[in-house]
Image (cartoon, rainbow, N blue to C red; front, side, top):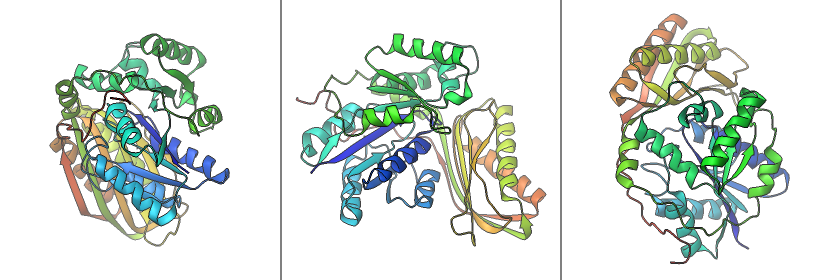
Length: 370
């Protein structure tokens, strides 16, 4: 039997990892074996740490988007098959990636159609960001070339999923749905909340066991796409944390997020997504998780440590429209300040900051057939 391949795209900060973990739980409860594939431009992913903490088998593809690492994608699926034989693969591409129909879905269908049933492509949106980027509401958004990437992600979607509907009222939700339907009439619109579970069952039913359609992939200007991606700075960092006395690890994450936000705001740098995890050395199963998805938004803790922290590992993934060196400086300076105030010692294990390279897909097939 063919395994289902369900890919969920969407811009940075849309909530893809949380939604995919919800879907993984749903499928597991239905008796299906699930494997996840995470993706980033570099190593040291919060997403992979979250999936591993939940006990799901996971493979991590780094060094580029699925489109540019297609052979790594199929190799990751093969490794998961050898280890756990999943019935369903859940794949989360990089949040700055688009052209997934032409560079991932159609090559998989044409080259590996006997092994995988390709589900409809879902693209998640954060409603507050989408209202601004699409011009429905005023407010700070990204520059035009970054907005080009955002819009192209939505244009290729078979299913647009408005996530975080618990964060907006009914009027704003209706205005966003109407705008999305007018701009992207070929897509189905679903509204969900990964936090409360509202609307998830309907969307799960739509993508589970279904086949993607065969309409041509949208045209894409790869120069403009590359320019848009290159405007985004990337920072990945892994740090060891030690405290002479038990410290509040949850407070450390929140204070760090506020300090980073303040420094980037002063530099007029718009945050796309800042994700952090803090894992205690001696806390089996204990994990703190924080998300910050805008320079004018508040950080949110989705998981909190149950006990005070003595030592642990901190992972910071920051993506923003700005100079990567400025991101590195903001994280390093903020972390030193927060650690000093908390009486903790922090040492870098691995840090990296860069702009994504120009995308160069392994395959690009504008249609399923030719």
